[in-house]
Image (cartoon, rainbow, N blue to C red):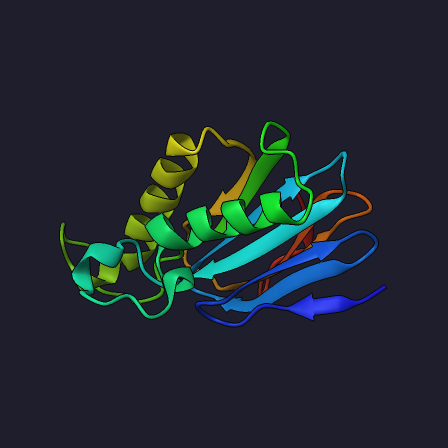
Length: 161
């Protein structure tokens, strides 16, 4: 069994019995897509909500709209059944103690969560569970054997969704 780590603005795909994780989700979102029957899973560490702010996109995994779609398409290539792919979502925290005003750079987490949900809806992927928003960072670990997402946050009990 391998433990695969996904960095910021990266995505990776694994098969059972491997686990996949990302560390340091603050305002970023970790989106896990998985096909429980075929034991294929992937994780993308979303940094920003919308790729339209960049003319020549070098890294599609950086954005919710392009990163989730990229992960979905690549998972199909390695045997995931698109009708069976589900999602789990974590992150999107409000990491700065400033007044939360509409359009502020301090609402990045909220915008990331919204964009992830919109992209998943467009792809017709159901969100099975989520642990989003709040004010604490997260580390997430997805286990292909159990289809559980383990969430670790400083000062909180570990949880499984």
